[in-house]
Length: 299
Image (cartoon, rainbow, N blue to C red):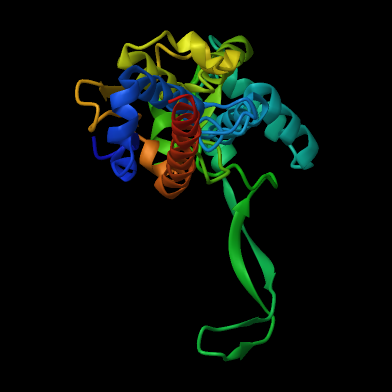
């Protein structure tokens, strides 16, 4: 559980007045704890653990996933346009011959060699200052660039009918993002490329769903009580979360929730979770003090 991010609501800081309240109504202490735990996940202002867990909303998540897919995979249609616009004589014809399955010149290896071809060119390096403070004037140097003028080409490894999921995973960092914008696979089937994108974007909300899974694991009320956004609730079965609770000892009640997704600690800041917990602890104290006041007046 090294990757887990935890959120625990307890009565530890309230022991000084909890005994008096517990003697009056033990049940209400537990009910308030549950109420605040539910608000910790998501309150009426759409704050809470869901709000600090990426993505900000479904649109942002879908956009990020689509961008990452397009950084790893490139379609034949995109390549054809690049070659047609390159102005390099013969490359479009050669690519078509290499990619024509069943044709006498069909060769995926030669297609990759053509697309990965690099050519030397002179580039200007702008003036800069070194870490030691030395000023370096602008100069020119020879570098290798794409022979067809597309910087994302040069690292294609595979040709395939559909996107290779393992290849996609290998390009992702610890946060699940693809940082480098260069293509690794040429995807032949446009339909399968679209299907893969649809499949992956449907997973947007899985990290948030970890909190719903933790709540469900508590065994109090269904996750539906949290009023989760649809893109999150649709991924509850994919969400990874654990929950524990104890109401047996009125002086040691607690509710613990943990988002156990493998990348939770990389994407959710524990410091922000702790801030939310502190706020909810104060709300518990405030509510219980109000009820104590009402009980005292009624006595």
